[in-house]
Image (cartoon, rainbow, N blue to C red):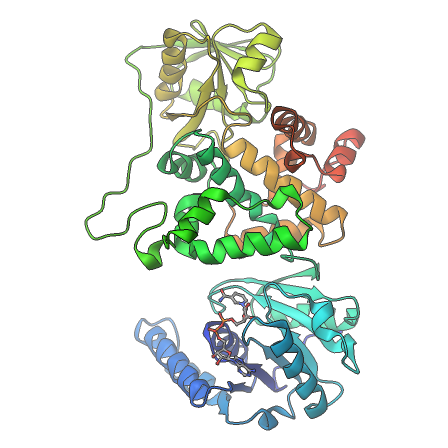
Length: 507
Ligand code: NAI
């Protein structure tokens, strides 16, 4: 089915943050829009708010004044639900309550034409449950925008058990025509983004709880090495811990307590203390006026190194060598098991084992483990950990090597998988399971994580680049280290690795 023509009337119900944003998006795409809210005056106020925002764009020269007037003229506040009777598409963005939404849908079914599409912007309710009891459940579908709707590109098109597939295609095309990046997904807890993103928060919270490093160091690693816009602590402080913790709890409960989604006690404690993040003035960080943001832990060395020996293939860390060479270091290559030797130190990319365990099992003295970087040729920081018997000199030599290439080393306690590597491995694992369970395609899952939460790379494409056998080994080792089902690798990851396949063929 093609996109809805932009002459078709779009009705938006609920004139809060989301409804107003969605109404603006539809009007900007050329649709006549009617906005209704059961709070008297709210819809008219929202239209005034949109007009003011668009006027600011005109002042900044980003929007033509005629275009602004035309968009605002297409936005009509409605005083009663009955005024939406001739809509072709209704998008509800009212309070997140199953019974209230269901009763609204029943009213709409009685009011609107049988061909009218009934879409919900719900972020956590089941589209299947919303449609239950309607005469035509096939026309109920999720259209999940992200906040703020005019700026965020992603729209998850969510199909319930009864949703008409042709409608899902039509809304997908419609969202595209609205300049959005739509993805198809099935109505499962968290849809794509709120499910696949859980390990981003969970791994940092766990690392903090286990004393791997402090918040500032873990955030800096995700930013400066991982290429994420924000680390998990600054991001959850921004989202609000009440909101982020509630989403985690709802996904955890919906998956019958699957430990992959286990909420964090330290985040719960923040919620209990009312430290909700920026909005309450304090979360993991202090937002009081004049409060200083703590610095990330960094190591430095006075040693000078001028060469290193590389044995075998360093795997995902291989691009580091070009950077070392560009910094004037002599790099000698020989066969071996993926190790980088400098002075007494033996460096290697983590494989998910503890440094001390790997040192003992592989008979390596002075082992220093490296964390993952999105791009080793550009990263300004890298996490390192070391075995209990690694000498101070070897550590200094490893730090000096990285320093020479312009990379700051941040220390992590000896924990399996370091910080960025285990976060990315767990994101990819969740993405793989979502593909396995038919929640979305690999392409849509990667697109959703990039367009919905600004990840620097889709987790599945990232896993392809690291190498699926390597990601599988990291997860197997994490699971063995913790003895928890939380780290169990997805069957699809194991199958792809065994078959020599990847998630995206065209890398
Ligand atoms: P909000 O509280 O800002 O706005 C909801 C609006 O709906 C209010 O103006 C309220 O008066 C109105 N309303 C409530 N019951 C109504 C009814 N029976 N009929 C007509 N109007 C009614 O909420 P927000 O944040 O805009 O969220 C709306 C929906 O969008 C929820 O389902 C939420 O889960 C979802 N959502 C929210 C996101 C967010 O970041 N805030 C992101 C994506 C989805």
